Length: 399
Image (tube, rainbow, N blue to C red):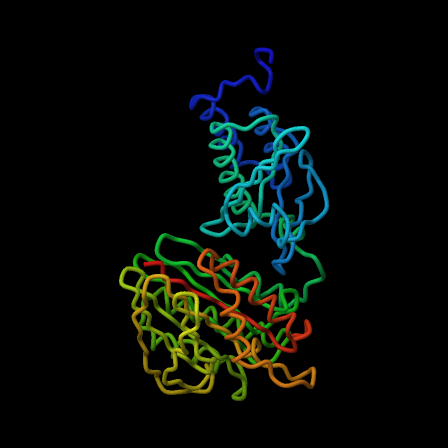
């Protein structure tokens, strides 16, 4: 290998600083559509080629190549059964030995979530390459997250089918679909991904606490999406001024009642998890009871006193409480996950949900992978019919 070639093995920390520093220096002023060329240039300096950015589609079924100058194209890859999907679901790099080199796949981290996968081809791979590629993937992921508010490129890439206006509104309100921290993990799946209207979930980690929340606005279409937007706004306002969990219900109830007719309502479930001690508090306003999973088996429901759905003027609800054990998972879900009326068949039912949870829960499986598989499995078991929004949100306290 000649001196000065892209693969000249000067991979010292000073080389790495220059490589990553160049990426950082240009990131703040880089238009979103030029992410490809700067990535290709950075990878070429490392001796790599054919960079590819694969983004998870809204249905959580496929990884779709981001188009653009400098980026390798290709066909979408299934999350299930592909090496890119394995990298995505496990959040671990994958290296593939090919006749013309090594294809390195790295997760694109997004605040504890993974937005997709970065793929790069190199002649050979050593630990310095792995270290620098991991950091490049982190910088590219941060850059895409920052640029996302200035472009439709990433959201267009993630669409595998047309999206309704109501779903457009709901997706714009959601936090990342999953979050992993040393003490707690949360994930969420919404179906039908491209036509969801009234279902939504939210979380915002605080020091020592995680306040997950799930809602289900009545009806479908824009009316449901509008109601969900008001309920989410009221919830976030109450959470940010640090009112008690039971008082959040009153904020949401008043906001919905003031904006909509008396027969309009939003089912809601609000939680507060002490991530230090594992103490979980919750308020249930019209949702099915959450399911407690311990040692990867369903051990029961978290039954509690309930109050009326938001908008009906119910009494200030009673806060229920349970102390979790390390590794416990709490599965919250909307009624659309277990009910099926449009097809004329019997309701899918909670017993079948529990059976599938027990089959899919494994010690080595991350919450995000279980949530995704559970949602897709239940949809297939219903004959791919979803007459209502069907949402699930598992939360794991890791201890």
